[in-house]
Amino acid sequence: MTEPISRWSAVETIGRGVRAAPALRAGFGLTLFLAMVGAGGRVVVPIVIQQAIDHGFRDGQVHIRTILVLAAFGISAVALATWAQRTAVYRLGRRSEEALYGLRASLFQHIHRMSIEDHNEERKGALVARVTSDVETLAQFFQWGGIAWLLDSTLMLLVAGVMLAYDWVLALVAFVVAAPLAIVLRMVQGHLVKAYDQARQSNAEVMTQLSELVSGAETLRAYDAGQHYTAKVKEVSHQRSNSFIRAGTIGAFLFPSGEVFNVLTVSAVVCVGVLRGPASGLTAGAMVGFVFLTQRFLEPIAEFTEVLDMTQTAVAGMRRVLGVLEIPIGPPEPDMPLTLPAGPLTVTADRVDFSYRSRGEDDEPPVLIDVNLHIPAGQQVAVVGETGSGKTTLGRIIARMADPSAGSIALGGVPLTRVANADLRTRLTVVPQEPFLFEGSIAANLLFARPGLTEADLLAAIDTLDLRDWLDALPDGLATQVGQRGTQLSAGERQLVALIRASLVDPDVLVLDEATSSVDALTEVRIAHALERLAEGRTTIAIAHRLSTAARADRVLVLDHGRLVEDGTHDELLRSDGTYRRMYDAWVAATSS
Image 1 (tube, rainbow, N blue to C red):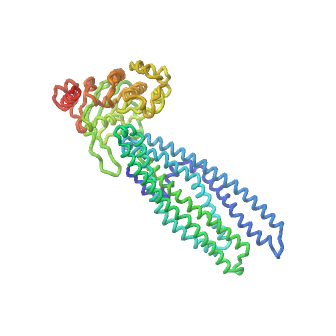
Image 2: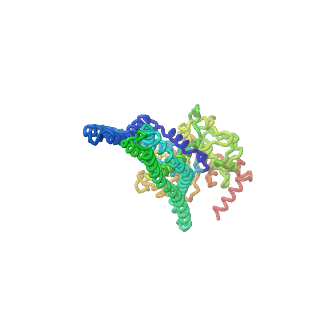
Image 3: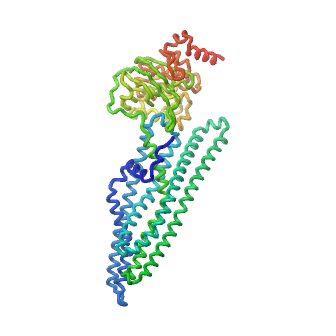
């Protein structure tokens, strides 16, 4: 997916991130004040040393009282500063975790509300990487890097002000000698941004390939293609390693740069101070204190060189997280939703066109073209067509998994774009071609559709579909574990669970994308019988991959290259000697051979 967010600068990305995670802003003023108090404690020590030298050692005598008072003041100030700094760190850490929690929750909700187009376009592994590794990168940054930026930046500003108050000439010397370090960091920063962006993209590619390798293990074993696909994983893993090594190499250049400028700056301050001598009004204590202040000023710069590469990683991760949040949700909720009428619902398509769009690329060829149809309430319709004819897409459009590129779909006379999603999902249910089951029991996979139901309710629904004999044949009944993605059940059994799940919602419109997987004869009879019971009194649209389903329907719609070319009963279409008749004859010949 082409992401426009790559044009965002680091500052703009941080600003957008703060807006996306409002917990970071809560109480930040107090946190900043405490950080400044903590930084002040580190400035007190050089000042105490300067005062002790200038006023504790005078006329060849040691003034113990003065030194003790200064020591007591320094200890008190440091204790206060330590408390303030620890409190600031605690507050920032807590707000950071709250912000990351909110960011994860926002990502989960946003990904769940993205349109089918965007889910097709953005690979699952990349989306998983956004929620896991990229957010984890931000968590690692906040654990140290974010705290370092807050504390060290306040320390630098405070120390710079004290240095100017001590001796503006020496302060300017320190600033001028240290200034090129900022230029060096700026030059390296640009390369780091590109390097870590590439590193994050490589990491997402590895996640995608690993996800496919694990999910497709059975297929790879069946074709003995494991070595071929493993080689692809090794290749992308090698690219990931190279990208992270390159980014690490650039980042490794930063630390010695800070050390070099540290030595140069202190040496310049000492040399200029000695050359100016006592005539400049700079006392011995002030000179020693200024050297300490110079070290305090340079310490954050040296630490910045260590956290800058972490910052660039976090910024790159934030860009990718925000990129997902920037994808418009779809289909969008209406501003003023209309309520669907009670009872069975009609389905109407008016001049519907649809194309799958790729971001940053030209539109794909249309999948549906000028489709017009009206399905009366309670009618059972089968949609048939060759592979790629658009029949599955039509089912998705009717279920509002995506909106038409042109035209409109209406339920009960109400345009789908005016129906609230919560209302739609209680009135229309989709049973997909390959039903997804979550790891857990059969009961758990049924109850998430209506969490408030009891076991008795589940058994009543199973009895309604006449599937009790199948349930009783399972080892643990409703407690039978389905395995990851339902792999411990057969394809037909997974479809039976999906049909029971749909019946629990008690929809007025049922969209069924018929499974193409081969099932045993008994399971096929059970599926057909359960579907017949489920369809009673409901408007049913079956995306039929087997023409035996079409033969049982009240009405058959035939799609060809995205166009609705035939509409009638099974018998009528057989007599018309058109597309449906040719498909039916080919199907009969294939099944009889």
